[in-house]
Image 1 (cartoon, rainbow, N blue to C red):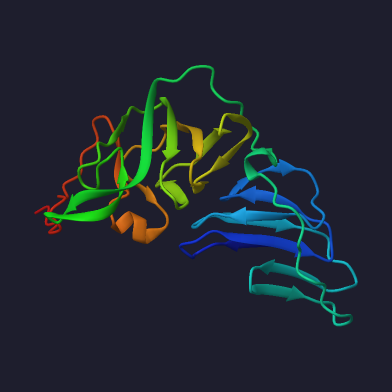
Image 2 (image 1 turned 45 degrees about the horizontal axis):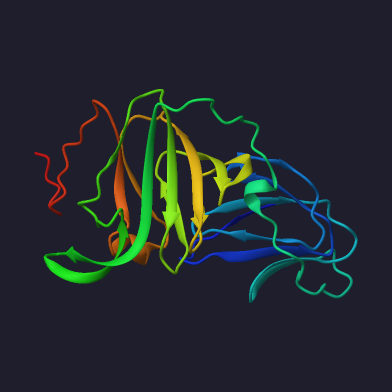
Length: 243
């Protein structure tokens, strides 16, 4: 059995499989090689996807996510209790098959915070990146073929699942602890955490990057990842009439 679980909520959810050992075979659509889990659970970021793989036994299996769940049954036996084991660290669970680059062409730091900022000409409590809100957050400028290092610092009190459109990032470390490394496209930066990730600039465009807790994005935690020489005919004024 292979279950792809997608978190379409704004908040993280904790997943577990009970009744059978299982593996996480892919994270955000890319393959992962990791150990077998027995009653251990994994936290799935807003916007994230895990592929859970196991061999169906002759008894029921429960995939649980808080109050929700999916029961798979061969038709006999009672449902197992939801998993209650420890949380794994997804950044150290398994390898995504790519080594971290030895050097980077550019480096950026995103400091995520909860501050008063001007939105729509009015001072409001906002979710900020480097003290600014969309559209005043400076874009991350890249060139085709470059390796970019991002240091993402959460100084607020809520998790921020960061999501650069059009790209996966290779997670290098969390809070100074080296990662597997593993590829993700929605990485959940918890309160007080510092993540280092690497992005390979291989998909030219003018891309949105934002917090996948969409109320945070709407309140300012949004910016652009822009390739050198790529332009858009669309404006930031809300009209978007390129003609």
